[in-house]
Image (cartoon, rainbow, N blue to C red):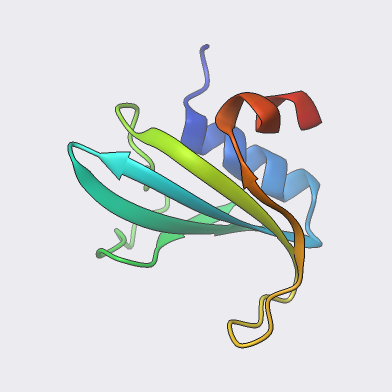
Length: 94
């Protein structure tokens, strides 16, 4: 795949601006959660680089699951479209 997983998810979210993606992943044995909205990614568990060209989801990341939510995201009342989608299942959506 020429586009890495993070770029793929950011492109998807740009094309689906009424969705928020919550991605659970593992990088080098560390767990992380990344929120993606309108093409931009932000880690919820570690610092995110200010430069948008620095990928938040590295090429060596292992995506554990993806939750699709409606925008705007409300942490106290999340509105799920689909939960615990695998990377393979997600790729079938597009």
